[in-house]
Length: 155
Length: 155
DNA sequence: CCATTTGGTTTTATGATGCAACCACACAAG
DNA sequence: CTTGTGTGGTTGCATCATAAAACCAAATGG
Image: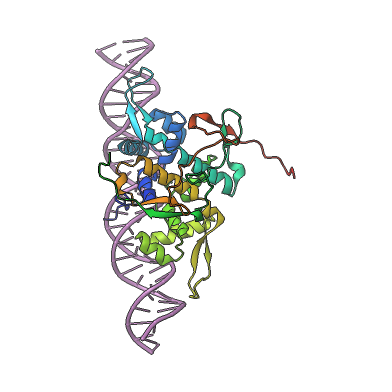
């Protein structure tokens, strides 16, 4: 078989998340969903992507529990795709991608929008990594540790 | 043309970042690079991916300014791939992906490692989105604003 | 100097993607 | 009831990307 290698059984959480949302288009669909889009046609016209690919991606995202289909909303008998809590939980990922572009893009003048605090209209602060006690951490201040064995029914 | 649609000219910073690091394998290569891997063979054996794909990805990452080739390091005449500042700047993206898995994965017991603060050994705190004045922001507290016109040579 | 490792490129088979055409259903007008 | 239009897909086909393995050249290693 020469099919694309799957990260499904991988023990790395980064690989596991990419398995769910790492496909081409997937994160852009989620971005639009976070923006409020719900209908097949809305996604299609906004993203300008082929409908069969959109169909496949929506189904995959539903299978992964990121979107769910809702039977209606505005009376019409069509279904809608709405984010689950797991889907809304991708927001920090999108913010991180956005901030990385804003900081390192070779042509930042081509970036059309900035994410701002609704209350004050000022840009959102850069995401920071902190320890549990609040200390600011750099990548070098961190390390990977084997996951502690799960306590069995400790409650 | 039926080639894969590129997001290169897109004005959305998320699309632009995916253009650079959204390919299958790319973020995993960056993850290993952040972990200290430098040599072609190291990446290949650690990731278990086909060498031609690795070769293409490494070249693309170099083209995008995420990796650069260094002529040596341990005396041998081979070249190495090291992260640029732009490459190291992807760290928050990887942390966001990792934390998303840790929080929402259907089988979290399969996740082998946790990211901890090196000094105390405690897990890194969840990434938070904050306003410039430090207020904690939810997605609903934010909005997109058109980028202000660039001041021309204000310095 | 020959064998092996390293760091790739080339070849070939198959899956993924993009585009356009087609189909099923709902709804509205005539 | 028939026609028309919009929505929400699925199906074919051409092309691209990916994977696996073979191949190759330079650098060690003995």
